[in-house]
Image (tube, rainbow, N blue to C red; front, side, top):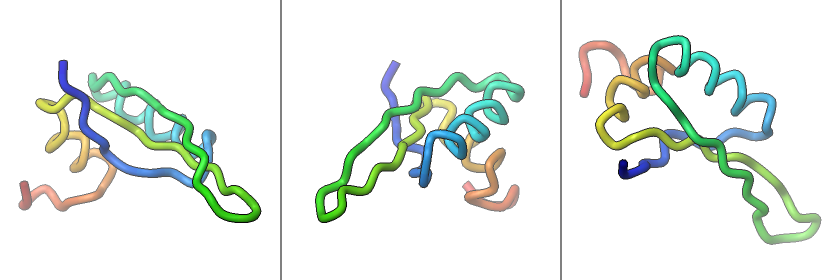
Length: 69
């Protein structure tokens, strides 16, 4: 399984909401927490899905319309 970055989220709550939506549609995902440099340090999360699920995952969370990809 090759993971692809689906999207970035501002926080873990947002990432968990997306993960729930994906999983309710049969797509497994992984959330990774990230710390970005700067002062003060900013944190965020990235949501990853399997390479083969990426186009459908994008449609599910509204990154592309159903007529695209």
